[in-house]
Length: 245
Image 1: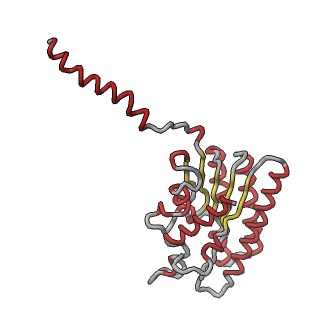
Image 2: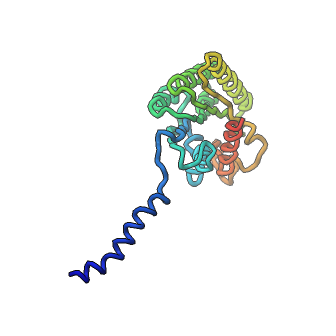
Image 3: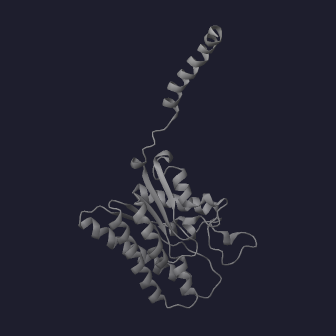
């Protein structure tokens, strides 16, 4: 028995040494309370619809490349749903943000609001509702998550095969995006509450560039307006540039 116990001594020593040394060198300090909380909000663009795989969408690219913070120090959630309008973002996703309390938010929406105009809705009415919804969204985010940094993407150009002047409609949406974001930003800055809001120029990121949209692919649906992987990478770059300002 004594000889058997003596033979186990080296094994016990090795286990004790590994148990005291390896975890200290390998484990990360998981202080979740100190992590940067990133929430992606919006429609199919935020969801990465059309990307292959879908985790090549711009929000995932921002997360994976450390644009928000280092990956180990980022808590990421994506609340986007393809097909939602600005009203649905306001009524469903803003309450979720109040629970998550993000430090950083990226937001794309408006494409589905635009489609209602192309389907015959009055442009002035739709743009007014969109502006009011965007105002409420930004106010809700800034109020429920003090100090949050919000990056709102504008709309990029889409070459749809229709008679309507799509470019003029997109220009109307982008004017509203710029105007409303400026209003809310100035309001909170004047109150000293520190809610940062910037516009990411998605329009400029894709304008005049080839291979950015699925509509350009062979035999693509003529109304397929979502980006390719290259397009999503360009959108992520536009958001990154807004974050660097």
